[in-house]
Image 1 (tube, rainbow, N blue to C red):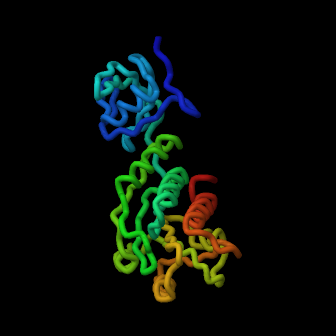
Image 2 (cartoon, rainbow, N blue to C red):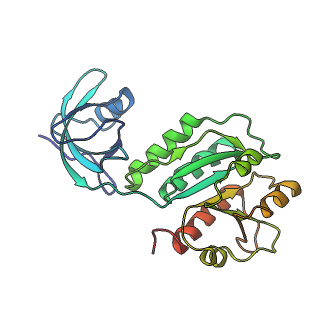
Image 3 (cartoon, one colour):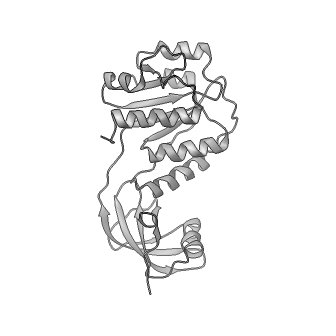
Length: 249
């Protein structure tokens, strides 16, 4: 007897790279096949939900379980493709567990791109982009979004500012205390493509702060009277942007 493979909120969702069309047969990769066959104890005829960031969400059923691969029959589209706001998170890498957490939560909060930024006080020497992407995929599967944010190659702060496209505003969460409240500053600057930059555990150096402040596309903001950890500041700023200019309203 077939079953619906359920997680909180409905059928299990899987992100796949392949095109999704009615009647097509899809072979899952080894990790996804192991998850369905050995973790969820799936059987032929069980239903799953699939998305690839391009074709919307589709319902499929398991047609066969092989030793290292699960085969799915694609049935019908259940949700048309939609995107997320054009919002980037530019984040100085922080220790592994907080970086995993921020990547997951930024995905849930609807960012379109996560950009690791190397600053003078960045203490993380190696960034596992594959791990970041895996965290983003898992969060997209669980949150119901139809896209996975781009995980960009690390770039230095200086190079990022040199190459910046001036039509994209960059929120600078300044701890100095002389910037306007975040929601007020964002609302005054209006809609369009945006990004948020968050410094490392030790904050930006005075020189980096001055360099950010002099850029015409930078919008300095305050996140309130308390000093936040980098991961807290990132999520607070994302939530403020979504509630002010994003797709929460």
